[in-house]
Amino acid sequence: MHRNMVIELKHPDGNSTRGPGNPIKLTRNNEESFSPAPALGQHTDAILEELLNYTPDRVLSLRQNGVIG
Image (tube, rainbow, N blue to C red):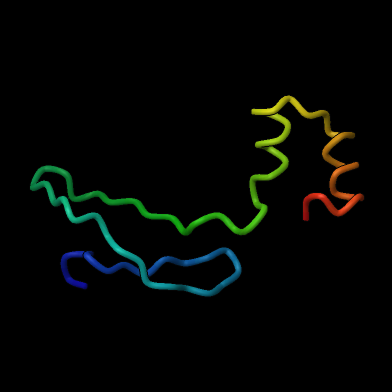
């Protein structure tokens, strides 16, 4: 814990969990930044629209038909 090999990750929902820290420690750079994994489906719209060029209407249709949550 002292060397940040095990870190506490705060989730937006208020919960926290332990995770692995960065095993590489540099003397000139003490700044480490960690964030929790995204929630299930958190980036679905962005991936479909930005990477696959789906229209917002098509994403909405997929959601309404139960294809995505």
